[in-house]
Image (cartoon, one colour):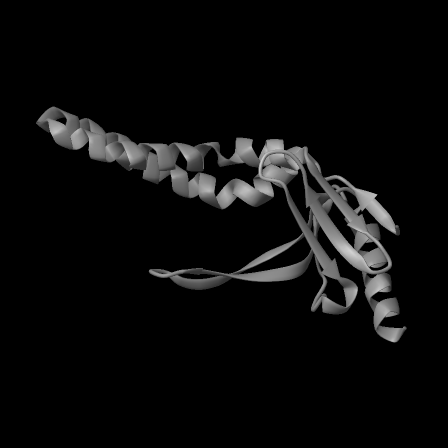
Length: 159
């Protein structure tokens, strides 16, 4: 074990959910408006309920990620980088050091930040595809973590 740590849950929630939260504001607002207007006309109001729930989920996504951020543990060994998420819908991402294609540091003013080292191609049939980055998110003393990761990857490639 070279390093292990936990993210700051508040910063983790912001980094993971800012986009869905911002999109959720107009989405939920329009769903409320549409459902209200449809309810005045009768039976069509029920069709707005799924959109209200989706919009509400988008608005509450920072809360979901905050709780999830409290259950995240990061680890760096001499063989792999691990993101372990416990609790409801547990998940473990384990990336061997020889499969890390890049290391990208995002530094905050307070010395915390993100170290990205993994990309996933996400697709949606109607909107095309996009690349989603992941790694050690909202880590205190992120420069040290990045340095340890770079040394581990370089050592793995040499040895």
